[in-house]
Picture 1 (cartoon, rainbow, N blue to C red):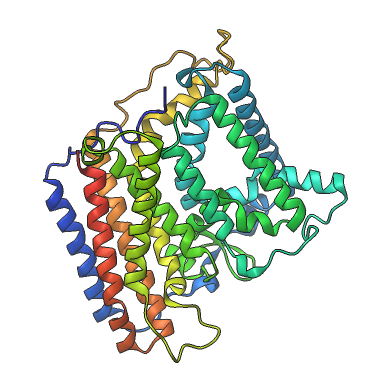
Picture 2 (spheres, rainbow, N blue to C red):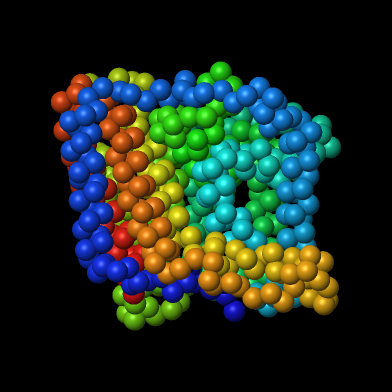
Length: 435
């Protein structure tokens, strides 16, 4: 048995037809673009320089070695427990804690936690904790490792890791089998720790797909770190503007958008009624949808710049950060109901992780409460997340264009990007809400 499909009874439940909702979302995006052209004629965002410092006492607690040490130890113990339960706990998915923690609590919960609280996973990542101990044991410099990781590699390893995870989640047979989940987590840890030993801590900032995803989401957080290192409350768009272009950044966010787009398509009647259920067709569909997303982005951003300075990234790379709110909006739209409903199960299963009849926290045997949020509210959150994600992307793109080009050129070069975003917006609404 697999983890239930993402979304619980929310499709087609909007009080308006899906085509009207998609058209309305497109109109909102176009309207935003027009207003930006009229009212936003010069750069306004402060990027990494912006934000109001937190009270020094609160910042000291957050940055305290004791606070971080305790939290890291707790997260590491939970991770080890999940792997152990995956290998030795109940063999069926509904009774085993591991798949629910991995796919729901961790993967889905990473989105709201990172958007609300910033670069949490970079601080708590149990792989970094294990790496620090392993490097000390092997007498390897934990910062530099043994060999330097070439800068040109950028985030490409993270993009590959996220693509493989997307395939596992959406295409692989029985992806929620507890033994498979435990094996995948163990294998991922071995690869990441080996990379950390060889290349130092830089490896995790380039190759750990989950940490990279959390870090990009953290750019949208009102809680961030200024260029001078101070913890601040800021305009989330300042955090997004602070994301610098680097190799592989566009690949990471496009893989994430392609993954959620295929998730929506593969659960629609358009796919299930016409395509045989098999890993081959799933792989082709996953690759095809991702290729369409990449093609749309390149069509919207690719342009020849004969006078481009040597230190300026090509347009698809320079504007890659604008896809982050789109990916975040897609994630919220697709996984909101999964987190609200199935996110209750890890707390239920944690009371009896090995199926021995224990009731450690008094939650064993409880059923999921499907009344905590209504169908209409779920549909509204889905639609709002997609629209707001694309609106934020339009604002970020407009700001970056004004920083790179003269005002008139900045406006013109956004036309094809706007077209790509409108197609993505309407398509996302249709996939999320269609039956």
